Length: 127
Figure (tube, one colour):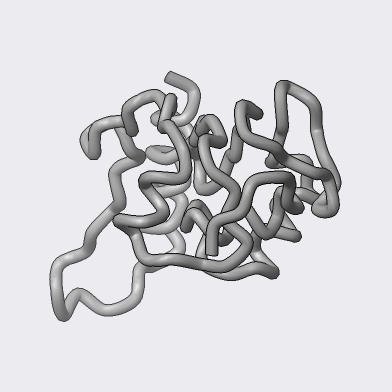
């Protein structure tokens, strides 16, 4: 399970449970959302103990420092021992964009309703 040395970055972020699947880890690396020691990396890049990994997914950035090399996915308690988390705290739920809700049974929004919702969303995004 644990071995000193090195491992691919996509395997590592999957094994410590930062992403759900190995293919999601590979896609994140290819999309430029993964950095090792502040450098964008490809999925096959090697990580070693002491490296700092930044993963940006779903609008949140996770920053972890490699303490132990894992080659296979492990349970959450064992995964937490393999890295040190330096991530900033997640934003509060109130800071997320509010979702427009319609009364139950009100039917589909009319064209006028949709324009008002679009205007409201645009105003919220601009500040």
